[in-house]
Image (tube, rainbow, N blue to C red; front, side, top):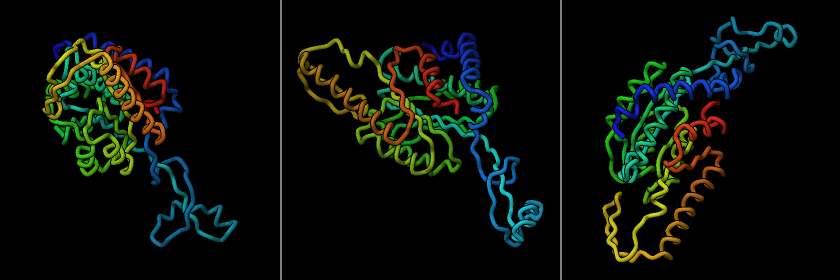
Length: 294
């Protein structure tokens, strides 16, 4: 599908429909919780602390002083915009086939970005492979969706996946914490744990979306073949039999279950979907799970 067709008027209408549905799913009370709370000088009372010389006298609770003869300062909660970072895999395995996982990822990210922008959150897109392959700085406001379309259109394939290397760079470059939506097939030769651990350790809130292609699980070839790894370029001579294909499917299931178990134990929201599923169905699933409308 051409990039122009991906983000046409019909796609924009679908985004607006998804936004309307998101408003129905998320009540006003839930919407308020989407802001990061910090202790500051806002309007919502948070706690007390003892007065220290130099503190603003206007925040002293004189009623407490009248009862205890001690000076206490009232602390308030202050709201900050929520930052949403989309970390999207651009390794070669995402571009295999027609349609492919990359085309699906772009529609998914555009949809979730539109919801975030419409909710006045700060949205940033960071493509990665073994390194960060560019960056769309945080944007705010619904009109910025066209900037996101342009950025997604221009993104190109990267090299071998390395979540650990890429996310180490990400956390050093982005000091403002927020939600980190990772969209990938997670075909990382060194594993997924290191990269996701970096996000968690540095106080980002991961949301994991694992994409796969059903055609990858049902290849229509058998016999003596020479297979080339699209990520590493390594070559293997194999004899593909029905028994081997069953082992292959079992290995994929074991890998995916391992990723899901990792996320579940750490209370990371995890979604696995084939690209044959309509992307808006996945968006609604994420909404209903409370993964994006917090």
